[in-house]
Length: 290
Length: 274
Image 1 (tube, rainbow over the protein chains, first blue to last red):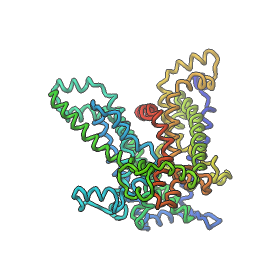
Image 2: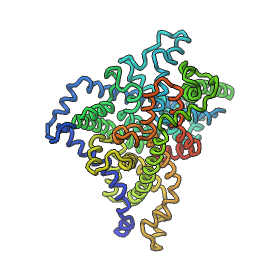
Image 3: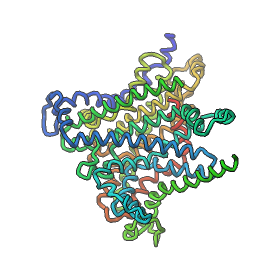
Image 4: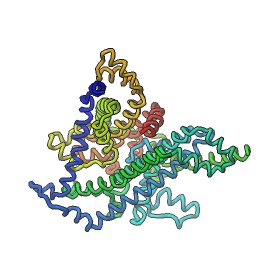
């Protein structure tokens, strides 16, 4: 036993560990400390200020709105990307003539930069843009909206663009999951006279659990870290209606409010961990139980 | 039953084709628009250009100063990919083979990187301490570090699926761990290397947020931030904007066309194994 240990020396881990530590883990760790300081661009000394930054965050309407928007965005995109991704995967797992072309089409937006996607959607989402004029032609003028300038729907619009972009990626993971399910299960269920819905809930869903897990994790973590689509589509506007944690950190950074910005980041870190870690553990346990 | 199933399949197919228009139309709007003149493009309609203006692309490259951004993008992407692949595959090899408390702790430590958001402002602080804030090399290390968790996660899944007796046979012949890693494990990891390379390449090439924080000097920017800047300056010339967007996307599209297999199958296989 002792011999087999020394066969795999840790010096091969060092390069990765050093880079990861210096440029990711260490900054995250000292972030906790700086969250409790008055660290600012225009000051030479850094002082410990206790909970002041967090009090400031929770008494600032814009910051609370940003936290709320981030949560809405994350929930909406997790649901949208997973439900549509799963439906697309089920459809494209059938024996369709255009299957391969359609798979490539649906997947294609997920290889593009979110910057490219957001800029394409700017003219489409304008008040006099493509979507509203299409609605007009269909006689549905009443559904036309100021998609990017109406404060009460702008976050939903951005979430929709994000779903549009990444649903093909979720689809690909679900497809791989579906293809790994043996057809024999379905045949056996058919012989037993099970309905299509029953074989979906009793065979497909449980066996798809690993794919569901990974997709929910990816979309949830990505959703809470949202930044680029908001930055390009609205810059947090109109007013501050679509600010999210990511754009608030950039703003705090630009204003030289580094202690506050770091505190916002710490809050994000804690929220992501509080939501994601139990979810991972719960899903792992369920997967083993299945 | 047979007939009903066939009808069902046809209906599903028609619906999926119709729905795919929501993907195709915006992309086509960009591609066709990039060849139009600046008046025609403002209609934002799906139609063939009256005259195909290929010179839009030349204009964009000359006036946008994008050649530099393109080169920066290639340099940053290629080097950070390489650093990431070499270091994380070696680390994953050891972590997957050793079954000790320390190795599983280290694995978890790396795994946290998949969950934790990057602490941007303090990372700037650290890079300033090291004295190379604003440089291309700092960004290379940051990208390598940001993608480390994901790569180690993918690699260790695959290393675990390789039989340990492969290594042991080589150890008996007197090879050391580095030799085993280079001569036995690395060749077997080639498909994973391709997957990681592509995922990191796409992530880095497409990213806008790191340059925004870490590259204050525009001469070091990669494509997305330069494009964003261009978009602000040329907001009247949507034909040029669309041309820039196509140009930015070309490398990842080419990569996708040639390496599609690795992107989808490699990524999903790795994701499922974890």
